[in-house]
Length: 468
Image 1 (tube, rainbow, N blue to C red):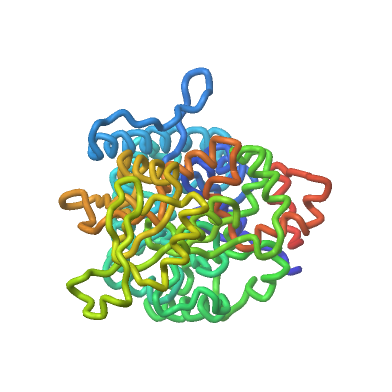
Image 2 (cartoon, one colour):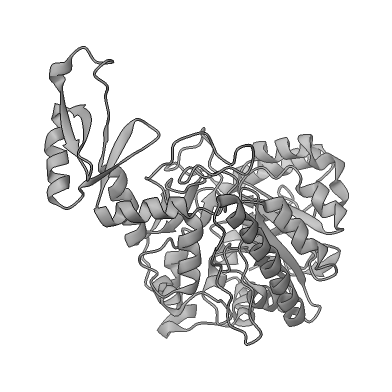
């Protein structure tokens, strides 16, 4: 393989290897500091980052406010304090080597307040901000204000064009790099647009080449592009290295750092990663953000899939003259009348026999059938909302206006804050959302992990550098 030359990022020569940021306590100060100490750019999550008591135990993010707004303020306070703590840990462990970034999801609740709160207290500790999951127009302005570099995450040249024209062209000195995240291969939330088919992936080379072409047209030809999503062995990307068409390139690894000794994820999660097979990662659209996202096909995804299948349309007597095609059924605890198609009666009867006796309305004039226990859980999660997203289809929370999206709650989705906190801190990974990139199945095939070997971050970086 070609030699992997260093690259200048955030004013320092580093390995062109970036730790991908993973939200809700999964990328922390220990992993980020260790990655930076190995010569690359470490990234800790500013999304619901963990804070600790004096004895080192994690302060779980439990909410006590009576209203959504009260709990939202608690969420922001947790996020700022946790982010500051992880920055301090990362800085200490890095020993001044490499560079350290904080990762923020722009569509998380209170994103700007959390980011500014972290940066205000971490001057000299944090060198950059990576940010995706939305269109972070204010990212360049915020980074420039706090004298750090910014790394927008985009999934198309179109997205970067919009960001550049509307915002970034005024803050170019602090543009560290542009992260291209493959919307078909990356883990977590993906930037698929309405014009792109989730089952028809496009080659990243052509998309990155178009991105570079635009960047050169506006004087950004020497700003690095960071390839993220689907990167495993660098030998598979050898034609990208020192490629004059693509210009300066670095590589981001989001999934592989999950399986390291420093990674804070629970042991059952690490064991599950080693057992995955090709096809075990599903690109789905259950997320309350409305974005596509990639996660392990476990019981959590299975239940959401089946919940949406147990769905029928509702009708109104006033709207349907052919009343003979419909039947009114009394369903649920309250025995409420619902007008449904006669052809749906057989399905409904079978679902009820299996214990899915409760119905929940969706915003799309339909109902889903769930068990009484699941109905109670969904309603409780919606009541307990703390505004972890800028807008949420599950709870109808919105950051602005009357703190509501104005739409009905959607029971086909889930509370993302709750499940990501649980999967990061508990042992039951089969029944929680478990994000992963689409190459996660390679853990079980890569000889580097033979016999259950779990490397340190340093051992992983050294392995990556070899290309294999």
